[in-house]
Figure: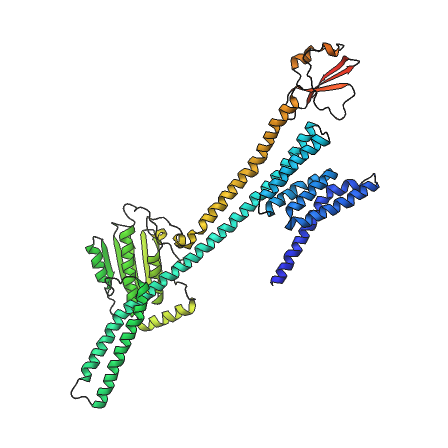
Amino acid sequence: MRVLGRRIDGGRRRLGDGLLGVLLAAPITYPRLTPPYSGRSALLLVGGVLLLATAVVLAWRRPLAALVLVVLGSAVDGNFVFALPVFSYLVGRREARAAPAAVVFAVLAVGGTLLNVGLLGTRPRTWFLLVTVLIFAGVFPWLVGRYLRQQHALLLAGWEHAESVRREQRGAAERVRLRERARIARDMHDSLGHDLSLIALRAGALELADDLDSRHRAAVGELRASVAAATARLGEIVGVLRTDAGPAPLDPVDDVAALVAGARAAGMVVALRGDPTDGDLPALTGVALRGLVREALTNAARYAPGSPVTVAVHRDGDDVEVSVRNAPPPVPPPASVSAGTGLLALRERVRLAGGILDAGPRDDGFAVTARLPGTASAAVASSAETATALPDGVVASSTSSSVPSEAGTLPGVPASGSVGAAGGGAVLPGRLGDARRRVRRSLLVAVGVPVALAGLLALVYHPFVTADAVLEPGAYERMRPGQLRTELTGLPRRQVEAPTDAPTGCEYYTDGNFPLAQPAYRLCFRQGRLVEKERMP
C-alpha cells in the first residue's frame, strides 16, 4: 500500500509538473511559432523550452536554483518574466529558510542596476520599471509563499497540540480510573476483611468446642488458618493499591441517610426521598451509591451554595435508581478551573458496579442520576454486559463525552477547557503560539515589504529623474513660437526620457508628476528657433 501510495503521489507530481510547464511555456513558444521564422527563433525556442523544463523539474527540490534559471532566461527572452511570479511563489512555499532567497533578490537588484545603468546605459524610467517588476513579480509572490508556508506550519502545530491534549485526557482519565479502582478495592477490603475476620473468629470458637470430634477439630483449624491467610493476602494486595489511592475517606461505610444528615448538619437544605437503606445491596452497588450521593452533595455545596438539594433513592425491579438534584444558585459562584476528576471517578465506580450514570445541567438546575443493579444476579449480569460491550479503558455513560469537564457541567461555572491543560498538553501551546506569531509576521511582511520597497523606490527615483527637468507652467505659457532657444526663460537644463516615436529636434520636459515623472511638455526647435510647443496628455 505504501509503494502504491508513493507511485500515485509521484504520478500526480509529474502530471502537475507537466501542466505547469505547458502553462508557462505558452508565452515563450507562441512568438517563436508565428511568422516570420528564422534560425535564431528556432534556437531561442529550443533553448527556452529546455531551460523552462529544467526549472520545472528543479522546482521541487531546488526551487531557488529554478528561480535563478528563470531570471537568466529573462535576460535572453523577456517572455520569461511571466514565469517569474510562479517560481518566486514556489521558493517561498518550499524553501524552509528565508535568508538565501533574500540574498538572491538583493543580488538581482544590485547586479541588475549596475548592468543596466552602468554598462547598458538603460534610461532611468526603464530601470524603474525593471525594479518594479522585480518587486511585484518576484519579491511579493515569494512573501506570499512564505506566508502560506507559515500558515501550513500553524495548522500542523494546531493538530499536534490537539493530539497532545487528547493523549493527556486519556492519560488523566486512566489515572483517575486506576485511583478509583484502588479506592474501591480498599473499601471492599474493609468490608470483606471484616467478614473474613468474623469467619475466622467463629471457626476458632468452634475449634475450641469440647464436644467436637478430633477429625472435625483439625478440619476447623485448617479452615481458620486458611481464612486468616486469605485475610492477610487481601491486606497485602490492597496495601499495594493504597499507595496511589490517596487518603481513605472518613466515612467509607456511611449509608445514604448518614450522608444526608451530615450535609444538613453542615447547613445544607437537603430533602431525602425513597428508601435510602443500602444494607441489602451488592457490595459494589453500595459503594457506588454512597460515592454518588457524597460526590453530588459535595459539588452542590461547592458550585450551588444555598440551593436546595433533593436526594431520591427508588427500587425499580432488580435495579436501584438514585438521583441528586439541586436548583440554580441564588448568586453564581466565581468561575474556577476543575479537571472533572470527581465526576470521572464517579463514572468509574458506577461502571464497575454495572450501572449507568448521567450528569449534567437541567432546566431546573443540575442533576446527577444513576441506575444500578439492586441484586447480586443483576450485578453479575450488568458487569458482564458492560465488560463485553465496552473495551478496556472506556467509561460507560449516557453522556456524549467519556472525559467530561466538571466545571463545564456544574451550574454557574463555565467550561474550563481540556483535562490535560496542565499536563503535557501545556508543552505545545508555546510552539503553537510561535507558529501563530510567525504567520502574523509573514502576513505583515508579505503586504508591507513590497509596498515599502515600492514607496522607497519611488521616493528615490522621482527626485533623481525630475532634477533640473521640470518646466513650470508659467514659463511654458510665456514661450512663443519663433523665439530663439537662447531667448527662452525658465527652460530646464535637463530633459526627461523621450518617447520611442519622438520626432527629431524635439525636447521633452516634465511637470513633476509622481512617481514616473512622465513627459508633460514637448518643445520642437529648428535652426535654434522654437517652431512648435505642445502640452502632452
